[in-house]
Image 1 (cartoon, helix red, strand yellow):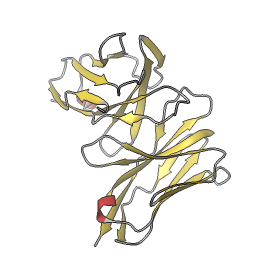
Image 2 (cartoon, rainbow over the protein chains, first blue to last red):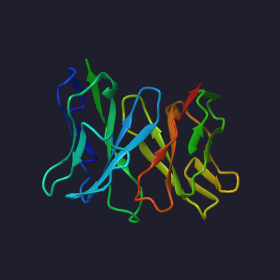
Image 3 (tube, rainbow over the protein chains, first blue to last red):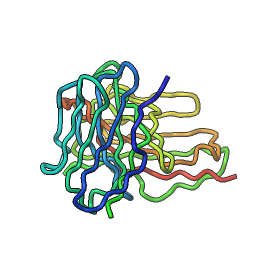
Image 4 (tube, one colour):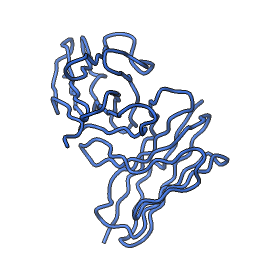
Length: 115
Length: 113
């Protein structure tokens, strides 16, 4: 019973480069959530996706950030032209779907460091 | 403004005692509230969920209460052990939102021998 998988676990990028973070949900889960955790801060919701659909992206910065969850393959969180302020831990969570039950299962996170 | 507040100071207790952590919220109408445990360098692990119409939930040594009048949840660990040392996060889902969770900043619990 593999849990939520994220890769890479650690990612170092220079300012201006692109960062791609991957998330494979738990088997049988079709809903994915991305959260960001800055040092000494709580987790902040970014985006909620179902297969091929973005349901809620109210927490995503308007520029440089995008997310997808294709029909096949993992969910991807992409950050273009990274800046130092993007350095954080990015967590993915999955669930079977609202109401079935509502528990979200988190992956180990990707720690992004922008130099 | 909306706020979820947890005691930012670390809670230090002796092994065997009951640890009580507090989560207060302002200007939210939660459909339910959850508690998670997070160890350093790891993702949060789900512990308990309590719905708006429930007063109390238990699971082994864990107990959660939910008071929508006080806008507060309490999380109790009885007979605490050093292995319970971690950061504990409360999170709520607002009524009418599509499952996104809003987290508090967490309280670090240290259980000593």
